[in-house]
Amino acid sequence: MKLTYLLLIAFTILSCSSNEDNKIVKLMTLDPGHFHAALIQKTSYENIDSTVDVYAPEGPEVSTFLKSIDAYNNRDNNPTNWSINTHLGDNYLELMISEKSGNVMVVSGKNSKKIDYILAAVKAGLNVYADKPLVTNPVGLKKLKEVFRVAKENNVLVYDIMTERFEVTTGIQKALSMVSSVFGELVDGTLENPAISKESIHHLFKYVSGKPLVRPAWFLDTEQQGEGIIDVTTHLVDLVQWEAFPNQIIQKTDIDMVSAKRWPTILSKDQFKKITGLDSYPNYLKKDKIENDLHIYCNGEMNYTIKGKHAKVSVIWNFRAPEGTGDTHQSIMRGTKSDLVIKQGAEENFKPTLYVNSKIGSGLETDLNLTITELQSEFPGIKAEKISGSVWKILIPNVLKIGHEAHFGQVTNNFLKYFKEGMLPEWEIPNMMAKYYTTIEAYKLAIKN
Image (cartoon, rainbow, N blue to C red):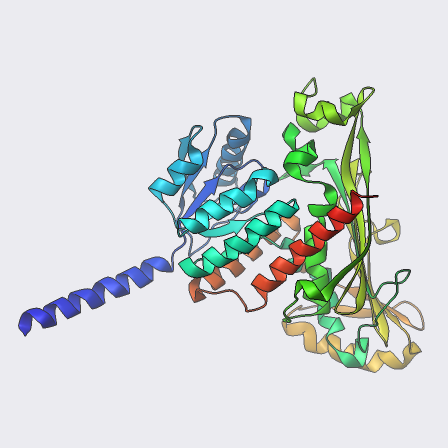
């Protein structure tokens, strides 16, 4: 009896210890070919082990990643304290699966390989924290369905990094759209005037963490990176779902693709060198060469309906932003009482700015001011400045404008919460499937045109 009692105590202690251990995330970063992998570690986290194991092929990409982490550890303000164990070689995936030095795989690199990495990880009982897009073609979409099936069987999480949900103007736009006295209801819209639209302009040459970003040449290969219509549009399609149908499950049957198109960005050899640091095109890019320029299909537009509401999403990649500007985002949500419009043009000094355009004149003012007061707990310090009889600009304190790089820390903290709870919100997984179904349907239609 005494022995049984002692064994029961020992089992209880071990179970409690195991449960405590499961609350701590131990990262394994796989093949970090994109700078987003490093941005996840730009900050430290209470519930992430400071030792990270990196599994990757040898080469400049992992070297750039390691230099970024070293810079974060040695900066003057708020240095991080990451310790990196490297496992470099051609068998990096097999080694990660066999060693299981952590419980969460981070992946941000060649999109063509990503879904296979993710499927291997969940089969091995590992959680996945992945940069977008998870899939780039119809075959990948079928594998993603298998990923979620296996992940459920093995009780692990798969979460893609949707940083744009944390951009403050988008957050306020969503919050206002949920207030019927200000927004009314989302209109059905038309092809010409969609109920919700998102446009994103990006740049191939840019600065990250204060330094010129050197992109790997494969980033310009649509067979490895994916076309623009299935890459950056992932964020925009996600925002359409997240804003227009908050906390609602979206099925693929709710999506009807109306039209889609794609077109190339043309790069000279000098521009290619500025982006990649390379003097010549690798063989895999020669298929995209016309005369001496590269024609990269990284621009796209889709028009579709979601639960009967017309939506439009478009993405454009230019070579370099004009001086003093950067990547830009434009968005409109059309309601029965007002339109919520995000602009980022010259008039806004190229900073995202949210406007409320009333459809009932100044009669909106009292309800808008009351709503702004109620939103102070979530967005402290915001104000509504009347700039005409029916238009207000939402003034946002600079302290809330933390920037794209800092959003990775916010998404990671969200993931940590879900990891601790052992589950995602019930709508996340079906909506991930619907999101990638949307981008793949757009791609399939665009390549026919």
